[in-house]
Image (cartoon, rainbow over all chains, first blue to last red; front, side, top):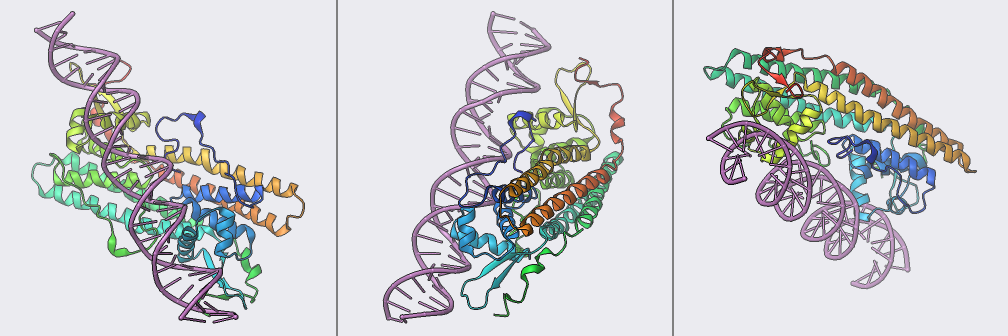
Length: 198
Length: 198
DNA sequence: CATATAGTTCAAGACCGCGTGAACTGCACC
DNA sequence: GGTGCAGTTCACGCGGTCTTGAACTATATG
């Protein structure tokens, strides 16, 4: 979601969401991966973060960075950074199969966690901040003489609006939590170890 | 909201949200206007759309394009385009005072309308599309032989996820609708005429 | 009609985030 | 030590969006 339906409306020009050519991905995989990429971009993340997660989730079994690189046609460095982010958010796990030297990466079940997590962050660091700003403005305005009563009421209303948005957001986050459940259990079969227990 | 808390976390580097220097805005006005700008940017609109609306809302009375230009330190062309957008979304009204030649612009009550409206659009044009993509992928996958049962289940789950997100979104939109009420009635006092009844 | 001012449009440029690719680190194996 | 591969970091460039500023249209006024 960049500049989508914004300005002109112009319903005819729907940017194509069709998947581009891929390396060795099966067509249906490409579509699904791309779909996740779109969703995730929609939420304000990087499209490729979504694509990587999507691929890992779809494949079910942990992939190496090199495989991801090939399948999604990304650069080495890019994959590294994307994985770092995903891992950091806890939606991807770095695992090592017993007598192999390379790291592999597995999708954690819920992308939703990532979304909610970060939406929470945004909310905390932001909407809160907005409210603070508004009440600050109100304080200042009260201090100055000659500010019409009406204006104060308007400021107040803006704050109310922020409150509403905040409450709605919280609600949204809460309901989003309805988890998709733990499919992944399948390959947490003990054949893998987590990062840290090296 | 650009790249905010994304990658590194790094809580120390909070980009300053403090208002920049302004023309003749009172400090408290500047803060409030900037706050709206931030919120609106957060929602995926242009910061300046928010600032313009904020100014108009705060002032209560219709302003000319020139005034907006000066107060917010924007270019002529920019103001024109911003106002067009806002008007188009129905959050700003173009009015003309009786024996004056210039257009003035007044803030419609609820910004929320704008947000919900567009969020709806996004949702309609997008999440729906995602679902379509996913079921398309599923169809394809079923067609091809040898696609493991497990993978189909994963696709299914992704679709479920999309459903959840959609439902949550709808809920969110609904609760956001709690309107802030009609303050604006004040200057719809008959002294103004609407565009079109010229 | 000439002039001035309000308003619109659009090409050029500023700006910014993302991904690339090369340089680097770390580690294993010979 | 040397070679090779996995993984990380980062300066740069591409591609996108937003804003500007100038050219243009529209409208009122003398």
